[in-house]
Structures are given as structure tokens and as C-alpha cells.
Image (cartoon, rainbow, N blue to C red; front, side, top):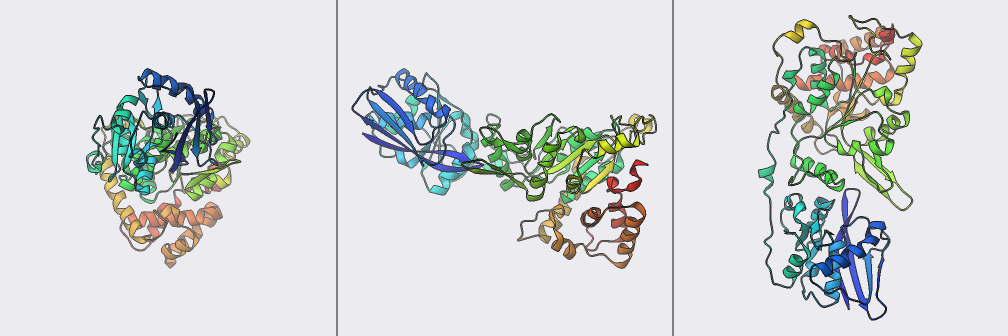
Length: 511
């Protein structure tokens, strides 16, 4: 007999339908799986056989052929265990149900018939809704992220006998729905707060501007100045995730298998901190079995790279295209996968190899050549994509001993959200979400300068030796500063402040 059951697989962060066909014919006992299965899918025959027998059902001693269609796409993972087992039971007459084709079925089987967690449930749930099917059969551990999608029946199951009884009409399993408003707080809470940072008013102001305009930041300062502390607190002043952003971020974490148990949605902006020993596949994504890298896991959030010059050159250069496009494409012989990667890059580095160039308390022991070599480990094209360069000096003792006197993250976030609201209206109807993403035509349109501002910028470029690439960065930063002040025009003092945030473009920096 022949049985057909629907399942699904994931390509990138999007799911596609897989039809599981099971055919049982008389002949010598055999179990063959076709349709480009990987090693995990091929091994599933032993799990499925043991699970069926240990659940009290009969495993056919005949020739079994399993086809996973479309045959042209490679099938990976253990997600097909449960649909194949149900297909065998249906083809052998142990399941008699006409509603099998109304559901997409997912699940990895244990040898005792229990059903385990699988990756990529959320994009598959969205596919169920898109295809107009009745619902989804999922492991109970995947219930939260599946039930967040409204309008379909999500059936959580624990073991194989429960699923068989459901399709044979012997047991009712109520579908579960989760109200997004119950798991999606309007304002997320954080343990960290900008008020914890003492001193560093200049750096905190720069990070506020970066948050308001979506600008990438490079912090330069001696060890112990607070660069890491500042970076970890940046997400606390970013605007709250919208539901659409949360859904997209959750899809990435679902595909990567990083969803915490019982969590329906990622409701806070991600913060990913990568060690300098990371490989290009770990940062960008890929591997033998392609999976999202750190830049995709930081989508809609922050990627922090500490000790930037210590990263391998090829790893840093691989960042250039994602920073420009907001996505990364991983090409293989048979396919190409695209993962979203729209994130804020926050990098930190010492001013020199010893770390004490310009420090008041310590003497720098580095030569000019050593400093130059250290700086040039970060290429010009990458620096070109980092809008704000700020110096973070050592904190004075009087600042450390005093009580916290700066603003809280909540107070700063209110100003940031107002500025982002102005930008949302400005770029409505386009694929631009913040000032940092403006290109040449939009910069000309929205960053017009009066005569006084033009004269100041021209004088600064000549006197400070600012590079040509600094010009557009200063314009975009000044536009964000004006938005924070709710000013429709870019004034002279906006340009003056923006010039301060291009430290590495000054020829006097190494003197």
C-alpha cells in the first residue's frame, strides 16, 4: 500500500513543504529512503523501527520505500522520523484516517516512541498558515514557538501512540494558541542600566546618537576604560522590538536550535559578543551543514567585537558585504542560502599594542611603526562602514567614588524612540529604517547644509586632515543629532559635534 503525509524542511529561514511517501510491497525485508537524504535521515530507519515496535505496533517485514519529495532538495535532520513512522503505520493499515493530509507533522523519535524537540518550528508553522492546512503536529517542547502563530491548530504530542490514537479517533488532543500580547511586553526589562556607568559622558552621548540613527561604533581606549561595559548596555537604550522584528529574529533562533525551552518569542534585541578566535563560518554563517552565524543571530540587535585588530583579517573582511546589504548569502554547489543580518556593529580596540597611547597614567612604549601596523589590521573599507569613532579615556577617581549621577537607560531610550519615530516618517514606504542606511541620493535630499555649516565642515576637513569617506559619515551623524533635538534643519552645532566622532580619520591621531 501507499501512504502520503506532509512534513516540512527549512532552507535559510524559510520553510518548504516536503511530501513523505511510504510504499510497502511484498518482497524481502528492506528499508530504503530516497529523495536526497543526509546521513541523519538515512539512520532514522533504525530509530523508527525500534520506536514502532516499542510502542506496541507491528513493523512490516516487507519491502519499504520512503520518498521525500521534492527529490531535488537535500533533506537534513531528524524532523522526518515521526511522519515516516506514521506513513509506515498508515501504509500497513494500522492508521485509518482521512485527515492525515490536513496536517504538517514534525518530530524526532526516541527508541521508546517518545517524541523529541526539533529545530525550525516557527518558519514551518508560518508555512502551514500560508498553505491553508488545518494545523501542525509538533513535539510538546516546541509548543510555545508554534502556538504564537494565530489561525491554525497546533497539536502538541508526547509520543507515537498518542499521535496514532489521535488520527484513529481514539483520543482528542486540544489545539493550543498563545496570545502574542501575553508574551510580548511593550517595554522590555533589563538587568543592566546606563546609570551604572560612571564618567564617560562623551562615550555615552556617542552611543545615544548611535542608537538613535542605527550607526556602527568603534570605541578606542586603554584597558579598563569601560568599553565592554558600555557596549553591553547599548541594547537597553534601543527602541523595543516590533512584533514583526521579534518574529523574524525568533525564526533565526528557531532554525539555529537556540530557542530557550518554553519561550514563544525573542522579545529583547539580541546582543552577541564574539571572541577574536572565531572563524569566518562562525561569524558569517555556513559550515558543512549551513547554519546562521553570529551576524544573523545579532539581527535586529547588536554585534560586539572586542579587541577588533586581533580578529583574523579574512573574518573582518567578510563583514563588509553584510554591513552594506543587511543580509548574507552562503553559496554551495547545490544551493544558496540567504540569512538576514541587519545589526549594529559595536567594536572596541586599544589605541596601540600596549594599550596606553594618550593615557595620562601610563607611558606608551610603542613605536610609530608598531602603532601603524596595529591600526592597519583593520582595513580602510571596513572602517568606512563604521560611522562613529570615539575615544574612551580612563575613568578619573573622582568619577569612580561618586554616586551614579547620569541618566537611566529608560530616560535615554525615550529620546532615541522619538528620533527613530522621525526617521520612520522620513523613510516611510522605502526599505530604509534609520539614518545610517541612507545612500547618496537620500543624503543629498535630507542632509542639506546652510552656508555656515558648509564652511565649518570644509574648515574641519582641511585642518584636521579628515578623509573623503568621513564627509558622508559626518552628514549622517549630524542628521541624527538634529533628529534627537527634533530639529528639521542641520545646524552648525550639529556638524561641530558630528566631527568629534571621526577620531581615526584625523592625521594628528598618532602624533
